[in-house]
Amino acid sequence: MRTVKGRETLSNSNLLFMIAAVIFVLMYALAMAIYPGSFLQLQTFFDLFSLNAPLIILTCGMSIVMIGGGIDISVGGVTGLVTMCCAVFLESGGGDVWSSMILALGIGIAFGLLQGFLIAYLEIQPFIITLAGMFLANGLLTTIHKDPLNVTLPGFVALRDAELVIPLLGSHNRLGNFIPLGIKIGAFVVVALVIALAVLMKWSRFGRNLYAVGGNSQSALMLGINVKRTKFQSYLICGSLSGIAGFVYIMTTGAGNVGNASGFEMKAIASSIIGGTMLSGGVGNLLGSPVGALTLLTINELIRAAGVNSNLQAIASGLLLCVFIVLQGVVVRLRGGGNLARALPSWLPAGKTTGKGK
Image (cartoon, rainbow, N blue to C red):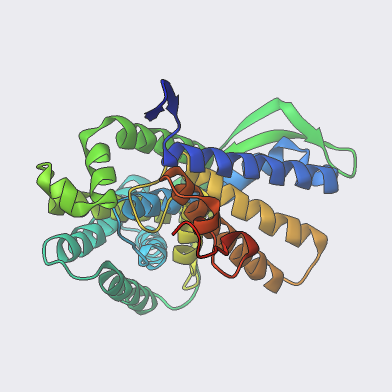
């Protein structure tokens, strides 16, 4: 918070989060107005959480790394690797659900440790290291098992099919049959992680240090903050969340596949930006991570419901991402004491200035 003339103003992180939240609400309201038969049902809203829980978890990890001024494009590959390793492990007969959870978390932590060390302590560019990590994960994925592998272990199948049923919030389908509301375990995992990470970033020393490092690493170093350790911890958390996302993914689909989580790294980056996290670092709100992911998913569902070519989803996502990047730049420039004319490009009418007053 900043104080201006005796009153408090929102920080950039909270302001961008509020803008993202308002846009999501408007987007979902538009979806309900156009397709009330689908989007007015609570099941549709909760399915966005349940079926896309891995992406939301990855977005949280990506946001943490981006707030610290970094990037991690290996998260999709690591998630896919975790799903296949867990599938092979469970189907081999040598493991159970709990040990597969430990395996998933261990793989994520291993990637986080390795990449975090190389980036933070050896000061290698994060894009290069995480690109290598993505290639490594994808290579290991195809080496372990090339074909889709369904998990039939009874304990895992029971976990996959488990859900919280709320009959009072159910709805009738097109045939007139009543279907109670069902919430999968993945939705609860997402809620628990988002709350825990939001608390970590807001009230812990690590969270405060990470914002400082992302804002200006040299200033953070002068303030006595261990910049290298903070960056290392951010990648360790991101890697751990990739492992969790991988297990949630296979728990959602019930199978390991070479194409699992393909392209999730780009979707996670886009969702983080839409949720209010800036690529330049130092600005972001963890509560905006699920909001950004849900906004992106709502647009895709709208296009799918309209029966339009799926290529339009990528076009719409790209346009929305560009809009949010420009919006972030304008908002931050204006709040930094600039004016709209200088915040916009010079070729726009509002961005043209005269020679007077220079």
